[in-house]
Image 1 (cartoon, one colour):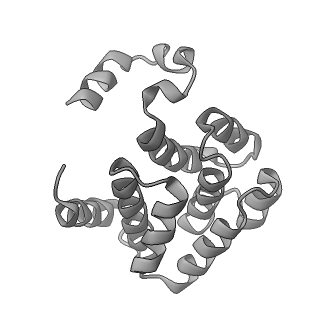
Image 2: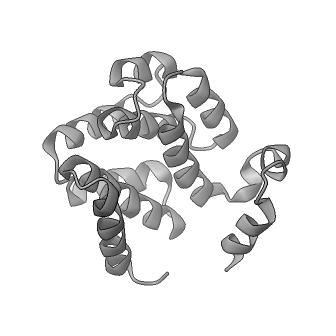
Length: 161
């Protein structure tokens, strides 16, 4: 938990096993750097800006992520519609960045708006939940959303490890 370089290498290796694509590898590194900073106390917006400043190894994704950061506060359904509702990295990650930027202090609304934006919301939701969960913790969402999960107790154990 204390070695950022080790995390980034683990993210690269794991991602390459199933998605060995330059844009996906760049997106995974961006997300890992963002999550690391948020867990260390940075605000999500600042963490994403810092991760962008470190560089994104895919220029097209870099541009889309910068556009997503600038979209904070705009209508979510319109923004996600423009990025695309698909689960590919070029659509899902910018859509999640918009959600995180727009709803940084309201994870529940972020997740609801994600679903309401339509399309393949799972990847956007995973990313949004990861970053906003790192910021706000497990109590940020309605407990009923969690307790109905089959492995809820095991997930809590892992979070406390």
